[in-house]
Image 1 (tube, rainbow, N blue to C red):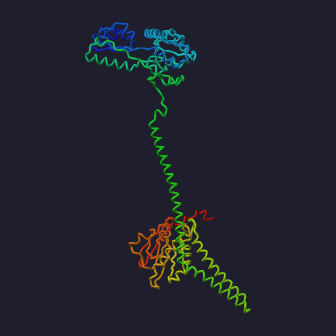
Image 2: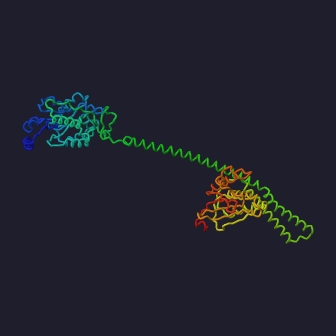
Length: 540
């Protein structure tokens, strides 16, 4: 080795040599003057006891390490308090035996009466077989094995991998590099700390400080380090570790790994749940409010119909009295024929037919009035638009005659059906036509005419138009007409058009007013057409 290094570094100025472990330090101090004249020797990972037992050369400086086998054994017994047997595994090189001497000295008196067995001079296969047959209440302390009892060379890290896999008891050690490969825990001096401190010494030497003035530093203090995976494997409770013990390779639970993300997600979920709950409460409140509004609308519409019917009392009475009078006249005629003894069957049948016709006429008037005067919830059903309008005009015919107003129909015969409540829609028409007749109170009798038109709009909606020749509407009043309690009549309450608007909008339509082209006013409202039935329904 000396000859190889002399040839390798011939002609190269070496300022510092780093020696790792005792054997390297011995070699560097023995042959340093020949191989690297004047170079400083910086060591690390040399046991503090060995450093204290020797005299360092004038150019030697370094960082000793303290291998605390006694503290490691105490840690092992703390974690496995039920252990009844201690097994120490080591190799046969000088380094291996040096560690073994340190371990024997540290373990004396610390086994608490438990037997200590040393597996040293065996081939590796026999050592593995021995730990494979250990009872579960044992502990294994692995030192190092560069060479086994048969003289076979090994890498200590490879040995610990096989040893940990074969052993029936947890394995402990003092070297940091063993943590990844199988030991459960140990009181360990960090290699990274030793390397950093040795590097700092190299820098100081290269910056001109005399190695002799530096000497050996205080040893690197070991500390408790554990492998979480091995603790889990052997069922060792992590809480048994002393305070401040470092746990490596821990597989964090989702809570530990993503705590803030989980808290953030929970906060979002809580916020969403609160928002959804608030929205549900608001929805319930809105639904209750809508139901209350609908009830008020129905009651208000009913009140409006009663008020309108009150205005038409005289005409309605006249409309009912006409068929009743005709019935009475026909009864008198029949009675006269019977008294005269000239009751021919044909004449009697004609009189009975007239009585039946007038009775049906009176019954129809009363039926329409009952429907309009009865309060009921709004319903939706397919309706014939023209027929709906015609019923209103028939009901108002007598009132129109009384006022000298001509009711003119202009119906589109191709209209589709509409979907709505017949009584409520007839109330809208009734209100608009009566308003038109009211507006013509001062109009010349020959000009009094209300035109009621139905038509189909380009967008598919059905449009209803009511036009009169009255005094008209000022443009400034148009935006206010459909507001509550706004009226242009002397004795009006201002609710009729407001009710009409609420009914039309509840049916998905809209209503508006226009100034008439020839004087007077025009009111229009639209309603959506009813959906057409599917082909199968039509066939049925």
